[in-house]
Image 1 (cartoon, rainbow, N blue to C red):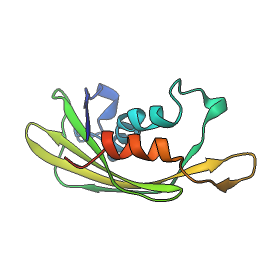
Image 2 (cartoon, helix red, strand yellow):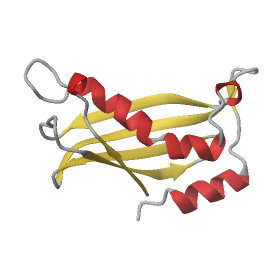
Image 3 (tube, rainbow, N blue to C red):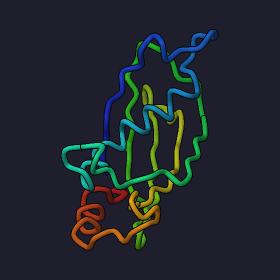
Image 4 (cartoon, rainbow, N blue to C red):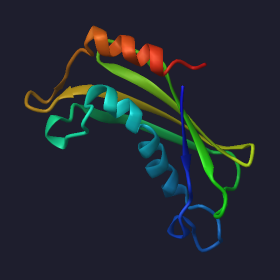
Amino acid sequence: MVKMKIFPRFNDTDALGHINNASFASWFEEARRPLFEVFIPDLDPKKWNLIIAKIEIEYLAQTNFGQEVEIKTWLEKVGNSSMTVIQEAWQGGEHVAKGKSIMVHFDYDKQTSRPIPADIKDTLNKKFSAV
């Protein structure tokens, strides 16, 4: 499991003063950066080989400006060419949102999925286990 602190910006809020729901997708993406670095250590877009096939976010409680949010990220499953990423957002000890996404190792030239190499699978399983 990897943990990352996010500090909500004023522009993450909505007219009601809460964190806007769209901010969570960006926060979850930022918290997946360590996962991206396993595949593309320098994060060079020309070498990019991942796509999001599906993303779900469930909002559990109001989230507010002025207090950091901790994002926890781990892998539920690593398959042949895809992985299931689980993420939780916590603020002030309260579980405020959870996300689930399917990421696919992708060959942009051939426009098709490709197997995740064994060494990368090993790293993923070690670094992103649930506990």
